[in-house]
Structures are given as structure tokens and as C-alpha cells.
Image (cartoon, rainbow, N blue to C red; front, side, top):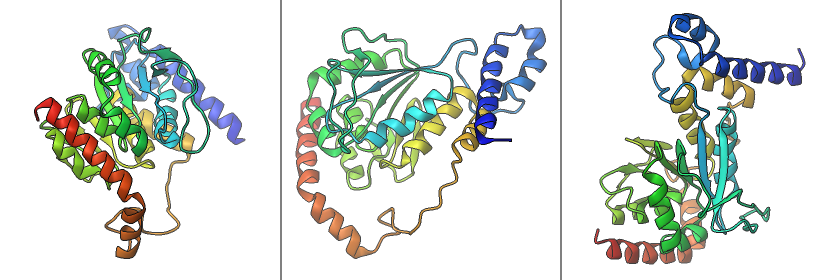
Length: 278
């Protein structure tokens, strides 16, 4: 079977499973066979069965494109509706030079999302930590969102909005400890779940994070098929992607290069935390 035909068949099966979720209670056993998110003994799925999942994903200047695209890829495979949200619909710059335009603004974005998401990017996140308009938007959206989430330094923004006090959370490794200024408990796991707060580590953790969210929305078996569709079987060519596995020299080099931006982030976070009274 050709890969194209396989992918089409899988997506068709997923679509069929979505329709099967509307079956009556008497057809539950049959629906379970069609829809992996309804399988017996399933652990994670807790979305309303008949509702398409919705995702409100913040976009912002100087974000890391991978922080957005990796989770978005997983979100789309849940057959969900993705909204990209910013203050206006003008293209915003990203780290790789590919601009992104919002589909919704703060003024017209619906507040019914299952998932509220903030991507990272050290420069962009540092600016948002003291951006009252963005923080107020996130606070309003969080009132109705099932999950409040981030990847990479996006957790700095969640902290500034007041969501991380007393919560376990992660971020990019060189900003993770700064979350403690917001009352968070910095945690080094790749994806950290604490109640409805779900945070992912640095940029490449975005897909792990996205799959974790997808399991909450659609269930473990559905996500296993997503992983197969994406051929998600990472094999890094080298060790050294974390401070624990990298050489001390490489860690020192990165901290030297990023030092001024990290210091700027630290100062912004401390000002924000003081303003919050944390």
C-alpha cells in the first residue's frame, strides 16, 4: 500500500470514528470499536464526545515557529478547529523568518476553546511578560478553557498572567528556574501536567506536548495512530540536547551567548512578579 493511500485511509477512519461518537448509548460497544478514544480501559480522553475540539493558539512577534507548528500539527490531527490569535491580523515575525498571521484578534476570538496555548521565544516572551493587553486576554480566555498550556518560554507568560502560582511547570532549560518568581515549582520533565495547567519544555518538546494534549482530547489509542501517521520515532544524531547530557563547555557557551537575553527576561519577570504581589 502506498503511504499516501495509507494516510488517506487513516484519516478517513479517524473521521468515521468522530461520527461514531454520536451513536446512542445502546451502540456504545460498537462505537468503541470504531473510535479508539472510546476503547475500554482508556485513560485520558475527557472531551465532550460530540464536540469538535477547539484550540485558541496565541501568536506573537519573535515567537519560535516550531513552538507553534509542532503542537498545531498534533491539534489538527484530533480533527479540531485551530484559531491563531493576536492583537491584529498583521503578519508577525518568527525566529526563522517565516511570518504568521492571526485568524482572529483579541476582540473577536471566541472564548469557548478546549485548549488555550502560548508558544515561546525568549525575546517575544520577555515582552509579553509585561504586556497587560495580552495578559488580560489570556486571563479572560482561561475562564472557560479546559486546559491552559504553553511550550518553551511561553510558560513565562502563563506565570505573568497568574496561572502558575503553586503549580508544577516547565520551560526552556535556561529559563525554567525563573518560573519560581511566579510561585511556580520548576520541573525538568519534558511535559508537565498539574491540573488543567500543561506546560512543555524547549522547542522540540512541542510535539511531545501536542501529543499529550491530544491524548487528553481524543484518547491514547487515537494518539498512537497519530504517532504512526507522523512517523514519530525520534532518534537524535547526538546526545547533548539537555544540560544533563551536554558537555559543561557547551552549556557554558550557550549561557554565555544567551546570557544578556536571559538577564533581560529575569528582570522583566521580577518586575511582573512584584506587580502581582507574588
